[in-house]
Amino acid sequence: MGKDKLRRFEENKSFINLYEAPYSQIYGKDHPLKGRWAGDVFGNDNPIILELGCGKGEYTLALARGNRQQNYIGVDIKGARLWRGARTALEEKLDHVAFIRTRIELIGSFFASDEVSGIWITFPDPQPRKENKRLTSPRFLEGYLKFLRPGAVVHLKTDNRPLHDYTRKIVESRPDCILLQADTDIYRHRTVPDMVLEVKTFYEEMFLREGKPITYLQFSTGLPATGSRAGG
Image 1: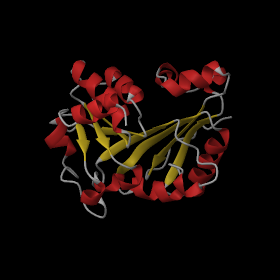
Image 2: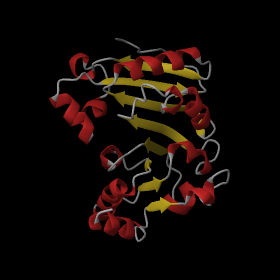
Image 3: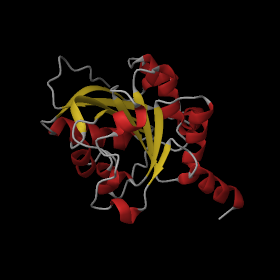
Image 4: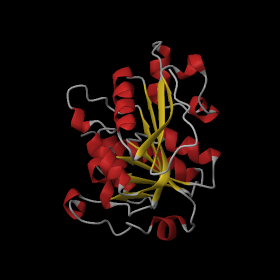
């Protein structure tokens, strides 16, 4: 392991906005902040929005800069990547941003029922041969529903058309999920909200340079939709 990575791991321990917990401390157990993020971390009752697999936190930070009426938490297992996001949030005094270093499959240990108001999943590993590991598989969705509020909105942004189609099929098959919008080429159709187009991750910029279409899917949980905006 390089010296720079080791330095970042050590510096992570001093960041007040970065929360880490060894696997042995949370596997099958609750993190001390479960159900307490609003009061103990953010000091307000604003909605909490997660970005799962946030990498360096580009999307988490961009969303937070645009809306101080919501709290944002980026989640990733890579400590060296989280270092960048956590440090930037501190430098910019974004006190409504936090980060968690953990495996996504353990996210239920961190949040209580109805504690989270939305999820962003941006350019995840599509796991073409391991359906159970896809972040939008029934396995993961069941876990999210345990802490999402009724009517919470989940966003998927990906360059991988098979993952987009797979997720749409899963959402449309579930009575507890309501498809709100689906677009297979957001920069060509431009039917999505402006912030979906304006905020770009490192990987998204790379995929756009390669000419790959970027897809977007949005669905809600637990409440009937007033009308679907699903498209092609």
